[in-house]
Amino acid sequence: MCSVNGAVPTTIIVAGLALAAYALLMTALNRRMGLGLLVALGVLEILLLVLVGLVVARLAGGGRPASMPTLIGYLIATPFIPLAAGFWGAIERSRWGPAVIGVAGLVAAVLMVRLHEIWPVIHV
Amino acid sequence: MSEPETPSASATAAPEQEQPQSTRTGPGRLLVAVYALFALSASARAVVQIATKFGHAPVAYLLSAFAAVVYVIATVTLTAGSPAARRIAVASCSVEFAGVVAVGTWSRLAPATFPDATVWSGYGSGYGYVPLVLPVFGLLWLRYWARRDRAPRPVAPAGAAGDSD
Image (cartoon, rainbow over all chains, first blue to last red):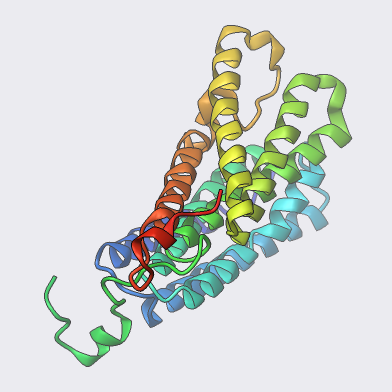
């Protein structure tokens, strides 16, 4: 039984939590969103797209989760998280921009746990 | 807080005493973001549950759908931010808080009613207790706006500042 490589979800959890810590530090320091947070969001976006690719490949290989609509919903919604957070972080010119990005980092980490619950072949 | 020392730091430093311009900016941006997240995920989850396995846990799924509607209303009214929208937002945040407490208690006392979890089961424990904390911050944020409305405006005479309702 081959499964979705655990390295990618684990990396996303670590990256998401690191992004959250960095963003909330920026909020605490009363900074606006800067280039650093934008780059970090970009890295998270790439990791999430790689994960979606791996899960889609697993589906194409014939695997099926217990609840297909739920998994499809998660796969569609996941890549929009860094995009939405980046957009909101950029238009909010105060410390609360990075706070929104921090939430996105936490959500990305939580999503990996939820994906594992939805379809246990996605290892964390 | 001291002045930023380098030009690059001052480029990203936010003004210290700038007041948010609406209920959806400043701290409201964070609040609306989290509300939108819950509105989206609760709605999607309720639709999937009701469409695919309604008979399995009808009470839980109807409560999920009700919670989803409350989150959608709170998200929309917090985004709109007009005095009328803020009154609806106060009502929906209050219903939300009462719902979390009631369903949380109900799910503890009669777990058999909930074969499957709702957003509000166990006081929102499945969602890191965010459902319990979120309405409190929502109501605090709305109270800030209600007080700001009542506060005398800098240029207006003292008698002209009371709000009309």
